[in-house]
Amino acid sequence: MTGEFIFDRKQECQRIDQFLVTRRPFLLFGPSGVGKSLLLRQVLSEYRSVLYCDDSATTNVVFRNLARALLRLGSPRVRKVFRNEDAIGTKSAVSLKGIVMDALREGEYQIVLDHLKRPSYAFASAVREIVGWGSTPVSAVARSSHMEDTGFLQPLYGDRSQKCEIKNFDEPLAQSFAQEIAKRSQLSGKNISEFLDKVLEFSNGNPGAIISLIDMATYPKYRSEEHIKISPLYIDFRINGGGAQ
View 1 (cartoon, one colour):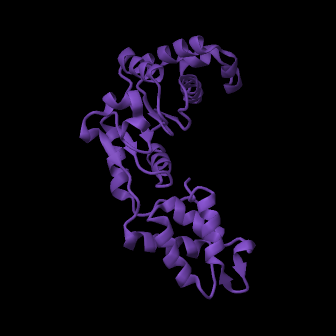
View 2: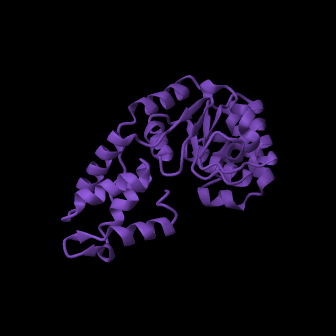
């Protein structure tokens, strides 16, 4: 598998950076596999005080992730209660929430909730409580800006200027990206040009899908002498969910 790298996303990174610099909450959205988390991690590496939750499945999970992040940042409030991250798992959800809320009020933090999926009313209430408790901006990441993905959090990002969409690559960019991934994967074959044309067709410009297709083409089961077995590869790609990452 090729290593992670940012390909032609300078404008999107700059926009995320601008949100963080100005401490404005934002909604980052785009299809699965488009690279939202990758872009975030790239930009967030410059922001020590941003609390990044890579799993935002439930309210309890979010507060546990926030407690771990605050502990790593050396929050006095959290360090007073927990000696290490393992101890965080022993606290009840109610106690943990109180500790995290107090810690947030004592510092200048920002929160980013990644992998957001249909948040409940209770989840949204907890987020609104965080926002109302102090001055902590809460940003979110979802597959789309529609209600089925952002749910009860939708009112928090009602302004269009708060939304940042990450799109699939257009055809020229997708072609360049596929060629770069093939090069990094050291992919070869007598029908590699035909295969890369099919990659563009099958992926619809989705970076994650492009990476998955090319990675699959390196497996022995999809090779026959010097040829890539395109049809079996594509069938398995579809069966496995279209390579969404």
